Length: 493
Picture 1 (cartoon, helix red, strand yellow):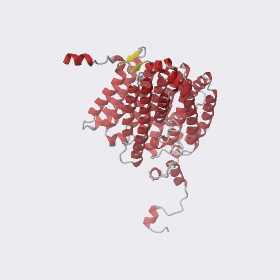
Picture 2: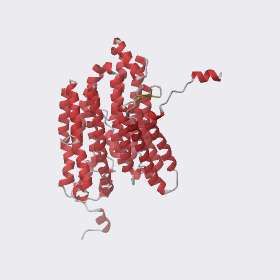
Picture 3: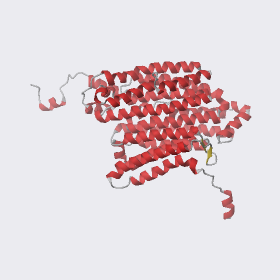
Picture 4: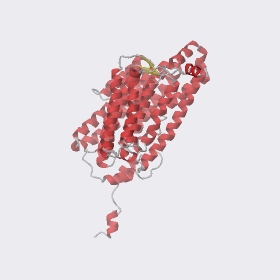
């Protein structure tokens, strides 16, 4: 009987060398969690971040080591190719940046250093799986593994109401997006009978009637919606500004960079490998979503006073730019998207690093807190300026080169109108990126009390209002009423 059972249950072959980047993240999470249990303050506040950086660096280094390898892992569940390895490298870089930004922050101390950094590593492992998935089941497992730790990380500042609100919003909206994606994947499986991407593509190519199957088309539509929720593509972006502003800045930087890397690479693989036979269906839909994201993101960022909310709306527009390469469904489009994603990681991580420094100094992420930064901290000002100019696509920056490649891919793929919207959106973005740059270099430092600005940010706001904008109004309002100190001390002489 045991021989029959052992013959029926056969473990899949695992290429441990190819799987080593993901394994490094999982092992790192376990080690960090155990070291975080030590009572020594040095172990918790120094050893844990150091080991986390080592784990992220090891994952990126092992991905470089496997660069020339091609194939699949775990019975075809994961791909071992440049696309998956680039995703792992990008996630590793974003993870190192998040750990460095977390040093001395409140969130790791309140949530416990070991648990905080272990969640970062587990989420990164899920992102690596998501980027390399070539099976519907693995795709969903990777998505959930990257999402659940982020729900917790967004709420790790336990004594700050906005952080808890951020985690709750992300949990609710993220769960809706995950459920939508799961139902879509189930419908695709029901229509084709396969979970492997290559088998799905063969089935769609061999059965012309399947391309008009409502079951399959409905599944593709739901998958698009689910992925757009995760990538913050308008009109499925409503959670992004509030979650980005409320979450700890280091976690926001990680979400804004690593999640974009994993999701966009997963979209490239899904649509170019599993669903190329339906490009005439999902292509126009993705093109419309890309155009909406570019317009909504850039226009929405114009009225933001909080730099974190500004970068949140900017990330919506950036997701629209990246979708352009997915829409055209050509090798040039895939290369342009991957290049733009990596450039976006570097530029956004640099911007959030400066936001973290300013927020710790002033207690606020409002644009007024950045006034005179060029005089106070020239290196921070230069880093922020270069990153914002790159995100805007100013010539001679890496962002300009990345956008130029996307425009070229769109024109070659007969989506010239989408390239025009991309250029117009980039022109609109100058209005809010250059405004921050002007505050950094041209304005005098503000002496408004940081505690007052922070208190205003923590005040309950009306739905859809910009808390930082209200804070700006409060700081700028003339003082017509007696101050609290005067009221307590008696009438003014």
